[in-house]
Image (tube, rainbow, N blue to C red; front, side, top):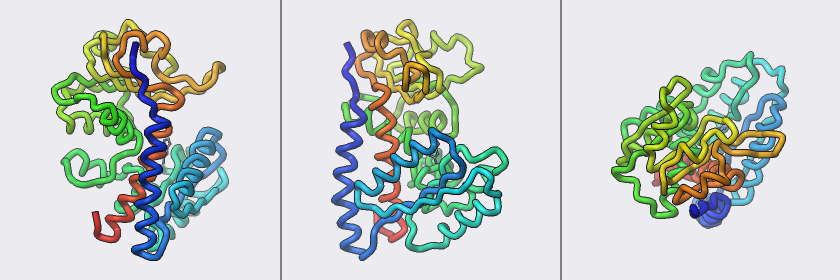
Length: 284
Ligand code: GUN
């Protein structure tokens, strides 16, 4: 039976450690680290995420600025909001919650965020530097997954890692981070042939495709480490990508949903905000 990687407990530990560092920053620089969050529209999932992010920001002692803009805001109006935060020296991090309404060009808006305030690690400069192995902000979710693996002292070097999903937010940066840890990395997606067999080869299996209980026990190698990034809202409530009850009998480690990767994403957002604040003051 697998050991359960408790993302909730680990995220709490990270937030409690940050509390002290955030307070030291305030003592030293005479101001609070500040994270600005922009939410456009009424997407219910986004509203929950943003509420949790703001709560956590305040918990670690950072200042939270929130901008709730109506669904019918124009691209120009959202641009102006982001640009004013970009110029504001008192703002350390800017988070534009995705997805934006369809009539707004996401790339155009994200590109208004200065790279040193890009707490999500979404900008080309941060993604490019991650690829090159240079200092950068790492996207929160994959960053959190690596922290979860490290928290259990799981050996990564030389292991076969399989990532299911190739999104810019999770799959692609996840693959880069596992490669940096010397894994042999395979990225699976909707066009992958023999996906089950590829997964069955994985020592480390990370699923980020957003399909409830997609990863079944027959796809998992004995004693594999299984990390579930999926958050799927079903009639049975919140369900991951992994058939947890059956896969836990085969895996050596498994992360649950809820209480796994989700809380870690928020903890890493705060860590990234802290790191951005340090970098903007030329300390690291
Ligand atoms: N939408 C879903 N996940 C994320 C995230 O990590 N950051 C932002 N900004 N939007 C998201």
